[in-house]
Length: 112
Image 1 (cartoon, rainbow, N blue to C red):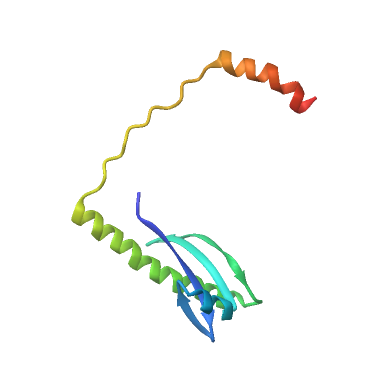
Image 2: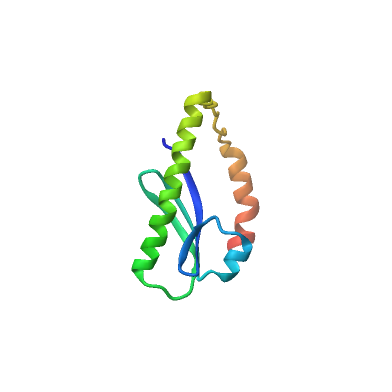
């Protein structure tokens, strides 16, 4: 288990910007959301004009550097104030009789 974070990256006038304003987004040719831990990128989504693979990789790397700072801050905060206890979760009980009634009532209506 490790901290994760995300950052929005845009490119305005050839320069990457983290968490751009709406005005900057209106002028940008790249608008991406990157989700990552300090070690690896987990999610990339967004829209952009036609760009090269190298430009896309540069945008991801730029966002990841910002995310590393955010993850380090999460660790520092947890060390300063302690980690919240994980609550116990009791799973739902299975009621096979109820499941059979629902199946009998709905199956033909949905799949016939």
